[in-house]
Image (cartoon, rainbow, N blue to C red; front, side, top):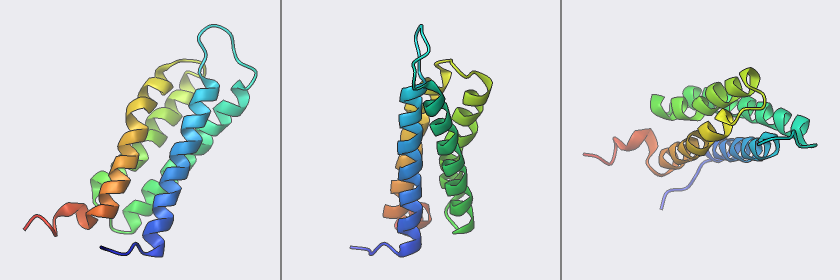
Length: 123
């Protein structure tokens, strides 16, 4: 069993924190007909989660993770954060969040389990 180093563990916690913040924000900001009273808080949480995902993506890039890990951890920041800024009350951010937030968490888990994208174990 491989020990997780502090830098890898801190990066993984940042990805999980970003996923939780963004998911809570999407749940608060989503509306069908009437704007909920928690809408401003939810919108700010989505943007805070986007900043955290962007920081995790930059951190993954600098720590030498594969490019697909940095891309998948940064994609929720760009897509969901951009949709939150462009369409504040639309459901497009929630729809994108259903796919992009789990993709970022899965990329994080695969990078922790198989470092360097699994190329070391593929031989």
